[in-house]
Amino acid sequence: MKEQQTKNISKFLSLVLRHQPETIGITLDPNGWTDVQELLAKMNTRHYRITREQLQEVVDTNDKKRFAFNDDGTQIRASQGHSVEVSLGLPPATPPEYLYHGTVAKFLLSIRKDGLQKMSRQHLHLSRDRETAVNVGSRRGAPVILTIHTGQMHRDGFVFYLSDNGVWLTDSVPASYIQF
Ligand code: HQG
Image 1 (cartoon, rainbow, N blue to C red):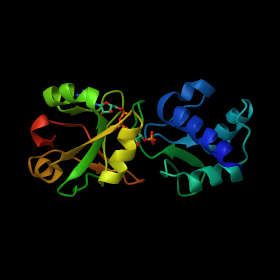
Image 2 (tube, helix red, strand yellow):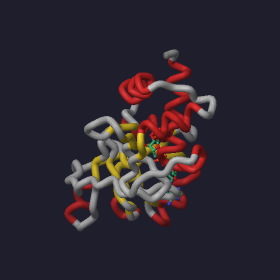
Image 3 (cartoon, protein in one colour):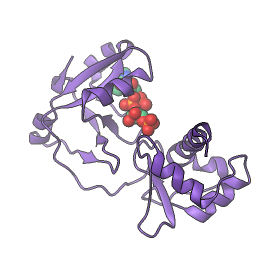
């Protein structure tokens, strides 16, 4: 498949597996999984014509490993980033002493006041290194990288999860744990 085609399909999968499954009339189960055959059938009634093998290629080559199949390959879900309510079933995990969050300057006043919030998503996303946070922040403009004292948060009872594709997830970060 051409790179652009793979990218288009990945964007469409992000839409239906994270935000608007109803767009193509699929449903996600409580853990975010949907049936692969049904997804392919529904996609093929649109202009996203794709075979099972091509879907596998999109999942395998995705730059952020955004999607995952279940063990027998009959179901697929997004590994993180949902706005629809799903329970990813991830066990609580112990974060490193520091994690990072990439944002942009126009949000800083509000972040200083309210801390970091999950906004429209199910979790707040934190990055394991500065480079990843720069990429996240750059989606919105000149990136500003915040350092989060996640080790201290964890000792203070905040709960963290590590998604299957290596993104750290939590509910919120009070401003007192953020180095601006
Ligand atoms: C900001 C992409 C004002 C926050 C990325 C961010 C990531 C506040 C925006 C994943 C705030 C929310 C998630 C507050 C947070 N006041 N603004 N109190 N608290 N914000 O897209 O972290 O490519 O929901 O800084 O790589 O940017 O989709 O979160 O700028 O992993 O797989 O509100 O999405 O992954 O934006 O990105 P988002 P995010 P994918």
